[in-house]
Structure formats: structure tokens, C-alpha cells
Image (cartoon, rainbow, N blue to C red):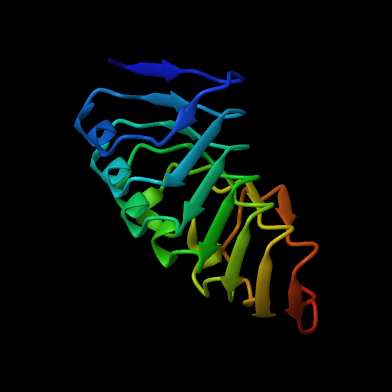
Length: 165
């Protein structure tokens, strides 16, 4: 099985941890349903997964740090759920070198923005708005965010001064 596309239905229940056994899975789209429970950490087993779309459900719990092992991932959309906890640092960096789009907005994520958030080499869109994030915006070092087009952090409790660079 290479694609699961079940968008815009009335599917309820949870995503089975057995999803991690689908070794050829490249696309998993189940957005705009009524899924609840937590996101299985077994998604981290999916070395070929390129697109993960779980937006607009009722998913709870934290974002699994195991997402940091999905080496082929290009697109992650977890927006508009009930996710809590901190944003895992594993979502940023060269381990997810192909990640271009990361939508985590409209959840209940807390804590600070990971200090390594600028180290994703191909990140184009990073949406973190409408959460409960606090602290200061980490400084973007020279050479980071070379492809960034959209950085949305509105409606949080971020403080500090915008860097001129």
C-alpha cells in the first residue's frame, strides 16, 4: 500500500499504530474527519512517507518525536487539532532534509519554539500560529531558512525584538 487518502469524510476513532507497518506508504491523508486519540509514534517507522496530512480532526496528545526519523518527508500538516505539549526539536534539522512544509497551527502547543528551528535546509512554510507558545523567537543564523517564504507565528505569546537580518 503506497497511498491512503480518506480526506473529508466522517471517519472517527483513532489511527492504528499498525500504520507503521506499511513500509511502502508514501502518502497518508486523513484530514477533515473526526479522528481522536493520539498520533501513533510508529509513523516514525515510515522511511518512504512523503506527505502526512492529519489536519482538522480531534487528535490529542503530543507530536511524536519519532517524526524526526521520517527521512523522506516533504509535507506535514497537523493543523487544527487539539495537540498539546512542546514542539519536538526532532522536526528541524538535516535529519528531515527534504521537509518543505510544516503546519502546526491552531492547536494547543506550549513551550518555546525550538532553538534549532532555522536548521531545516529546505523549509518553505512554517505555520505555528494560534497556539500557546511562549518565550522569545530564536535568532535565525546566517545561512538558515534559505527557502523560507512563510513564517506564521501570530496569536501566541512570543516576546522579544525582531532581528534586522
